[in-house]
Image 1: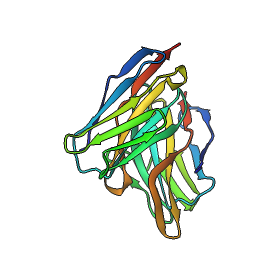
Image 2: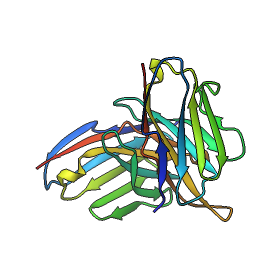
Image 3: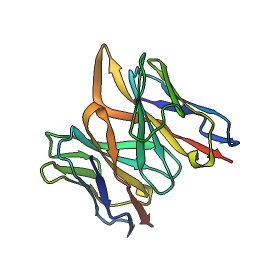
Length: 120
Length: 111
C-alpha cells in the first residue's frame, strides 16, 4: 500500500530557531500534499495545501511567512517553521494523494506518522 | 464553514461488545466521508471511505454508514477487542480534497 514518511519524528528546539519537517511519498507520486497541525486532545486542523511546482495554499489564520512550504518534487514536500516559539509546539502531520499518469488515483489521502515539535 | 462533531468524546466498553460511534457534519455538500484510527502519538490509518453517492462501506468487523441529507455517519464496530482501543476520527472531504476532521472518539476496550 501507499506509504508516506515524515522526518524527523521528534524535534526539540530553542525558541527563535527554525525547524524543517520533510514529508515523502515512498512508493507513489503526489502532486498535492497537505499539512495538518494537531494540538493535544484536539483534532487535526488543515494548515495548507502543498502543490508541486507552485505556491502553497494556506488556510485562513495560518501565517505563510512563518510556515514555509516547499513542494520541490512529486515525492517531497517540506514545512519549515521559522522562528519557532513555544506556542508552535504541536504534532504536525502530512498527507498525500496518489497521482498516476496525470490522474488522481482514488480519493484516499495517505497520512504520514507525524512529527512532534517541542519548542523550549 | 463545515463543522464536524463526534459523539461520544470517549467510550469505554468491555471486550466483545458491539458499539457505535457517531459523526455529524453541518454542510451536506461533501465528496466523501472517511473514518480514521489514530493510536497515541501516531499518525492516521484510514479505515473506511464512503463516497457521497454511497450509503455504507464494510471492512471486516467495521461498518460505516452515511446519510448525507441529514449530515450523519456512524461507525459500527462488532465484537470489540482490546486492540481496537484508539481514537477514531471522522473527516469529510469538501472542495479541493480538503478534509475537515471531528475531534474524535477515544475508545477503550477492556479485556
